[in-house]
Length: 302
Image 1: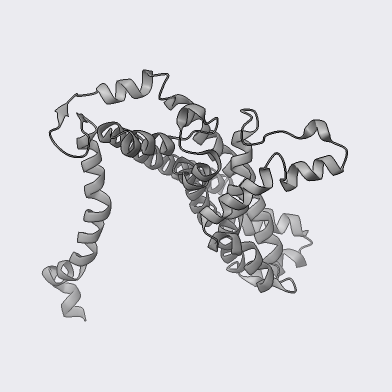
Image 2: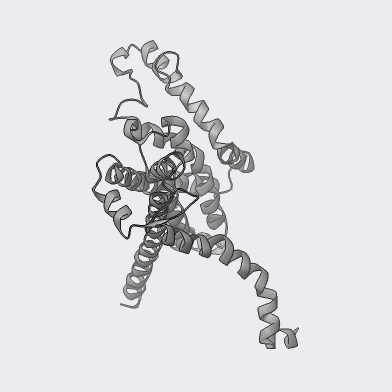
C-alpha cells in the first residue's frame, strides 16, 4: 500500500475516473453556460455573438422581472434560515435526548423528503384550493369567512403559500442532519454540565450548539443554496409563466427563456448568475461561521 501511495501516477490513475466525472458533470457545463451566455443561440444552427446584451436585458427588462425573481428567492433563503432551520433544530434537540419512540418520530418527520415533489405540489394545490381546499373550508367552519382567499393567486400570500410546503418537505431533512450532530455530542459533556447545575437550555446553548456548529453551517448552506435553486414545487404550485406568477423565481425564468422561448443564450446567462449566487452564498456563510468561531476562541483566551 505504501508503494501505491508513494507513486504519483498510480494516485492519478485511481483519481482519474472520479475527476473525469467531476469535470464532465460539473465543471464543463459551467464553462459552457458562461460561453453560451454571450451568444444569441436557439440550441441549433448558427450562434450570434451579442456580448453582454443578454445580461443587460436581464437586469433592465421589466418583462423578464429578474429583480422580482431574485428578491423572491432571497426572501425564501431568509425564511429558510430563520424559520425552517430553527424548527429543524428544535426537533433535533428534543429527539436527541433519547425520547421514547425516537426512531418512529424520525421516520415520520423524514417521510416528506422521500415523497416526490410533484406529489407534494398536487397535495398542497388541493389544500389551497379556494372552493374545496382544507384551509378555506376550515376557516369557513370557524366563522372566519373574511380570512378565506385565493392563496396562490393573491400577490400578498402567494410566496408564503409556496414557501410553507417547502418547509414541510425539508424540515425533516435538516432535522436528520442536526439530529446526527446532537447524538454525536459525548454524554460525559452533558453529564458534567448537569452535575455543575446547568439547566437543559444552558446545556444546549453552551455545549450542544457549539459542538454541532459545523453541521449548522452545512445546513445553512444547503438551505440558502436550495432556495436559490428552488423550482419544481413552485412550478407545480404557480405554473411556469413569469408574467402571471407572483412567486416567480430565477429558475422559472430560466426554463421560460431557455426551453420554452428557445433563448438558450439568455437561459445560460441566468444559469451562470445562479451558480455565482450559490458559490457566493456558500463562501459568505463559511466566512460568517469562521468569524464567530474566531471571536469565541478569543473570548475563551481572554
